Image (cartoon, rainbow, N blue to C red; front, side, top):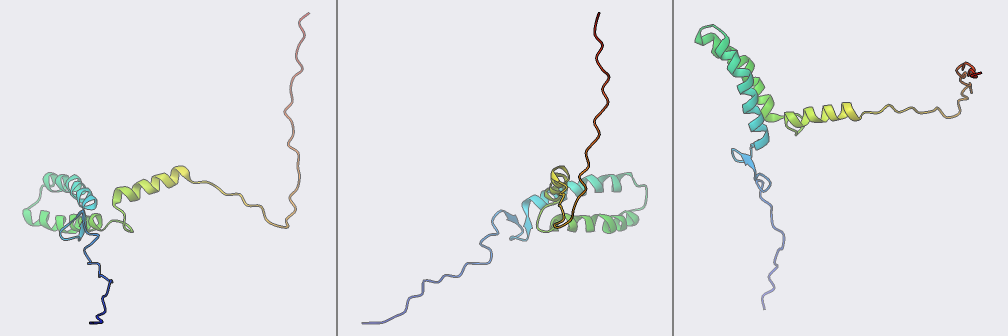
Amino acid sequence: MDDKEYSNVYSIPANYTDSGKLFGGMLETRNTIETVLLVLLVGYPELAWITATAAVKVVLAVVTLLPLCVFGLMGISGDSLTQYVARIIRFGIRRRKLHLRRVGHRYAHTKTPKKYRKPKRRNT
């Protein structure tokens, strides 16, 4: 009888989780769509309304739109730009102030003064 060892260990390919991404798993679909919209919103007015030569427009596009495009495709800490902005807004709405009392400190116990009330008039 042959005593062959069988290995049940299988390697997981690197592109296993790349489904739903563009360009072979390099770009996320959400980031790509947001970047296209962002570049259109910023780039069209910049290139259409500026009265300059074509060379100046190309330089402006390279200086402003190319970094904006890279920033939009990368995202911030793994999130898309809209997810990041939503987290900032959600934090601003839900933030709390924590008031911690110090251990061993004796706080002054003061009574709040009561408001003065006028005595009610009796109808006679």
